[in-house]
Amino acid sequence: MENVESYEPVQALASNDHWEFKLYVAGHTDRSIKAFENLKKVCEEYLREQYNIEVIDLLENPQIAKQDQIIALPTLVRKLPTPFKKIIGDLSNKEKILVGLEIHKVYTNQGGDQL
Image (cartoon, rainbow, N blue to C red; front, top):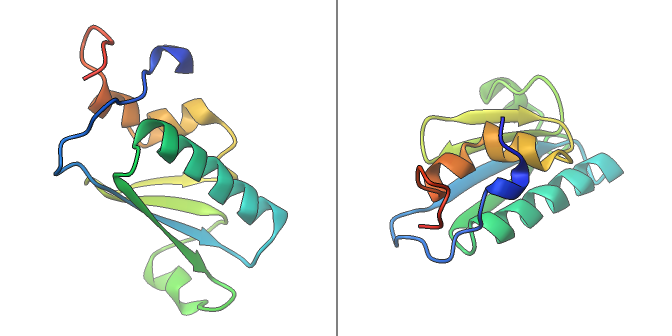
């Protein structure tokens, strides 16, 4: 497996490239805050301004957990681009985020050069 350092941030994105994330949390705990901060950092570095993060507090809306099939917290769901992807945890492992969300496949070509 490649190292995170081999994934280059994008310089420019096509106007139709947009990422939609839902981050499911349980209140404003340290773990929830850390998950949001870690996701935001990766998005800023790799997706620039082409993303949206919706934070859903299941303490305020517990019925959403069953509806969206959330079994652990925090959980990140990538809604767009499809297919959906899920990552559970505080998102502290950058490589896990990049691989799990397939960010590296979208934004680098076969030679690893920036697109």
